Image 1: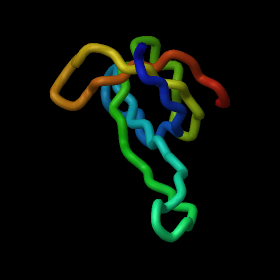
Image 2 (image 1 turned 180 degrees about the vertical axis):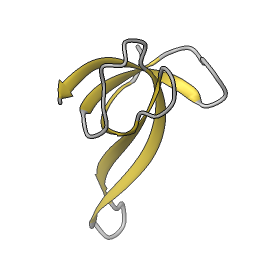
Image 3 (image 1 turned 30 degrees about the vertical axis):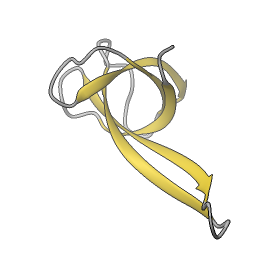
Length: 78
Protein backbone atom coordinates (compact mmCIF):
# COMPACT_ATOMS: atom_id res chain seq x y z
CA UNK A 1 0.00 0.00 0.00
CA UNK A 2 1.51 3.31 -1.06
CA UNK A 3 1.45 6.24 1.33
CA UNK A 4 -0.72 9.26 0.49
CA UNK A 5 -0.40 12.78 1.83
CA UNK A 6 -2.18 16.07 1.33
CA UNK A 7 -0.24 19.29 1.22
CA UNK A 8 0.08 22.79 -0.18
CA UNK A 9 2.24 23.56 -3.21
CA UNK A 10 4.91 26.07 -2.16
CA UNK A 11 6.98 26.16 -5.37
CA UNK A 12 6.48 25.20 -9.00
CA UNK A 13 9.57 26.72 -10.62
CA UNK A 14 11.26 23.44 -11.61
CA UNK A 15 10.25 21.54 -14.73
CA UNK A 16 7.86 18.62 -13.95
CA UNK A 17 8.46 19.12 -10.21
CA UNK A 18 6.52 20.85 -7.44
CA UNK A 19 7.49 21.33 -3.81
CA UNK A 20 4.69 20.32 -1.46
CA UNK A 21 4.54 21.34 2.19
CA UNK A 22 2.91 18.48 4.14
CA UNK A 23 1.81 19.28 7.68
CA UNK A 24 1.07 16.69 10.34
CA UNK A 25 -0.63 17.36 13.67
CA UNK A 26 0.01 15.11 16.66
CA UNK A 27 -0.03 15.16 20.43
CA UNK A 28 3.14 15.07 22.48
CA UNK A 29 3.49 11.69 24.17
CA UNK A 30 4.43 13.01 27.61
CA UNK A 31 2.88 16.48 27.86
CA UNK A 32 -0.18 16.09 25.66
CA UNK A 33 0.34 19.38 23.82
CA UNK A 34 -0.79 19.48 20.20
CA UNK A 35 2.20 19.97 17.89
CA UNK A 36 2.50 20.79 14.20
CA UNK A 37 5.39 19.58 12.09
CA UNK A 38 5.90 20.21 8.39
CA UNK A 39 8.01 18.37 5.85
CA UNK A 40 8.77 19.39 2.27
CA UNK A 41 8.20 16.71 -0.38
CA UNK A 42 9.25 16.98 -4.01
CA UNK A 43 6.52 15.62 -6.28
CA UNK A 44 6.37 14.77 -9.98
CA UNK A 45 3.79 16.79 -11.92
CA UNK A 46 3.83 15.96 -15.64
CA UNK A 47 0.84 18.03 -16.74
CA UNK A 48 1.88 21.31 -15.00
CA UNK A 49 -1.63 21.76 -13.58
CA UNK A 50 -0.71 22.55 -9.97
CA UNK A 51 0.25 26.11 -9.04
CA UNK A 52 1.54 27.75 -5.86
CA UNK A 53 -1.12 27.68 -3.14
CA UNK A 54 -3.04 24.65 -4.46
CA UNK A 55 -3.99 21.83 -2.11
CA UNK A 56 -2.83 18.59 -3.74
CA UNK A 57 -2.79 14.90 -2.95
CA UNK A 58 0.51 13.11 -3.51
CA UNK A 59 1.28 9.41 -3.56
CA UNK A 60 4.53 7.56 -3.01
CA UNK A 61 6.26 6.33 -6.19
CA UNK A 62 9.59 5.05 -7.41
CA UNK A 63 12.61 7.38 -7.05
CA UNK A 64 12.68 9.73 -10.03
CA UNK A 65 15.70 11.75 -8.93
CA UNK A 66 17.86 12.26 -5.86
CA UNK A 67 15.05 14.01 -3.96
CA UNK A 68 11.84 13.26 -5.87
CA UNK A 69 9.91 10.28 -4.44
CA UNK A 70 6.28 11.43 -4.79
CA UNK A 71 3.80 11.97 -7.61
CA UNK A 72 0.83 14.36 -7.80
CA UNK A 73 -2.43 12.42 -8.02
CA UNK A 74 -5.12 15.08 -7.70
CA UNK A 75 -5.59 18.80 -7.15
CA UNK A 76 -8.13 19.12 -4.35
CA UNK A 77 -8.45 22.90 -4.10
CA UNK A 78 -7.07 25.37 -6.57
